[in-house]
Length: 352
Image 1 (cartoon, rainbow, N blue to C red):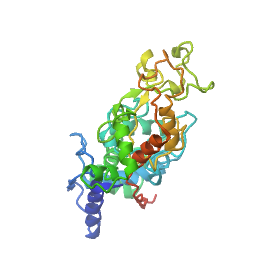
Image 2 (image 1 turned 90 degrees about the vertical axis):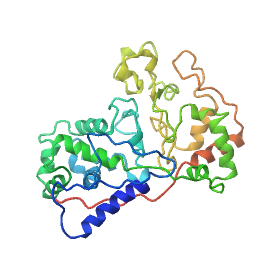
Image 3 (image 1 turned 30 degrees about the horizontal axis):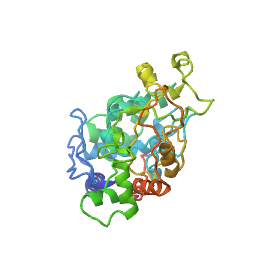
């Protein structure tokens, strides 16, 4: 957890614990969220899932707890580890999908690479829990209810024991505090002209100009939250999906957004990821196919895999005519979008 908002929430929670007396079950404390990290707008919070210190504390415990899952006995933190930018270290579960970062998902419009998890963090958490709960004999909320520490924590946060809805809300609330901002680039924008190197400043001009990166990686979170086909995977004969018609093999996960909309124009389209904290979140792309920012820039600079006319690849994927120096400058700018702060320690989980 990072940034002033997250620090404020946990600081308030720590103060409450330090009194030595447990708060009444329904005396929920609404945190003073203050300002989000430099460079980010106010965090949107749904009216039907308001943020409280108790819910953040509870959600943080659940994020790290493997007892929620029966399918792989893994936690949110196993697939989205805080010490790796809350992103996957490698493609997971044989689907050629890399676990995306949780950073700044509070600002998201679609969840999962193909948008199949809905449009809110609550949708995302509910979808993941359904997946990891497959074939469970006892629902996860009943397993949590059997743990005294969780019963107490849920009473404090919700005034009742664990159920399907409040487990989802607690985790989603915690995820809204996982924020990434206050990077060298943000400090440069705020007026600190020493925050960016000369190379990164030249890279910034390329990013917003000649290289055209900002046409998709836009806004304070550097993503348009839309879906684009950039050609990734088409040059691998084991993963090609364009001939003759993707509807012949709808089970292929590389069909991307098509699997949700069933529109031909969405085949191979995946969500634009944030560029925040890139230094922590390798490998890159939806399939984790690139391990360095140099590889990413080189891919775009040469115009993708080439020969993609008529295959639905976004027309913005074209040779950029960048020199070797310009490529280095662009990488320097991308590096400046990372604050690179230490991850938070894992919490002590309720025994049971």
